Length: 263
Image (cartoon, rainbow, N blue to C red; front, side, top):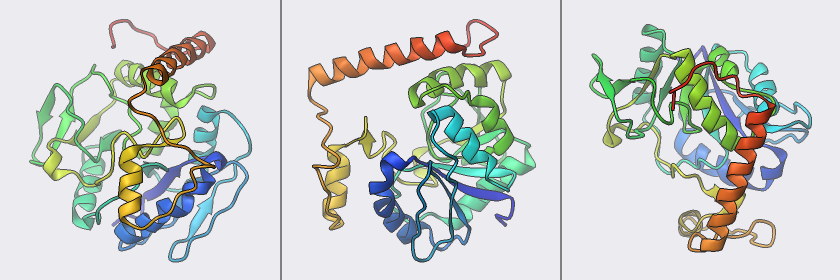
C-alpha cells in the first residue's frame, strides 16, 4: 500500500543527540508500518534496531539546500515528512494513514497535513475526515507532519532559507502556486499525536517535552541541550528580533514571490 511513499525525517547533525530518543518512540508507535526511513543528515550515520535507516549524508550546507539534497535521496514519488523534534506519542493508526495516502493519490493533491491546524476555510470532501484547504491562507506551508509530492515540496524550497524563512515565504509560494492542499479537518481525526510546537524551541527542550520524557523514564543531558524558558520576556523578545532579522536577510537574498496579497 505504501510502495510509493518514503518516510523522510528532517534533521541535521546538530541534533544527533536526540536521534535515539526520536526512534525509541518511533519504534513504539510506528514500527507496525514497515518502510525504510530516510534520516536527513550532514555527515553522520545512524542505526537503530528494527529499522533500515538511510542516512542521507548530503554534506555541510544551509538548511534549505540540505533539505532539498536530502529529498533528492528519496526514491519514492511521495514523502511522509516528519521533523526530528516531532516525537510521536501514540500508536499511528495504519488504516487512517492508508486512507490519507489513497486520498492524496486519487485526487492528485500536492500535500495533505495529517493533523488539524485550524485553517479558516476548509472545503468538505467525500471523505468526512479530510478537507481541502482554501488558498490563499496563512500557514499553507508548515513543518507539521504531512504527506507531500516530493517534487512539489522541492519547488517550495530555496537553498538559502532557514526554517523560519521557509515557513513564512514557503506559505507565500504555496499560495502563489495555488497548490492543491488538504488537511485533517478535525482534531479527533488526527493521524499523528505529537506536540505541534515541537519538543525543541531554538534547540532547547520545552517543559512539555521534559515532562513527557521524564514520565517515560528518558534521561536528558541538560549540559548538552538546555531548557527553553517559556516565561522569559527577554528571551521571547530576542527570539522575535532574531526571527525578523533572519526573515529580512532571507528575503533580500530572494524569496520568489510573484504576486501580492497572498498573506
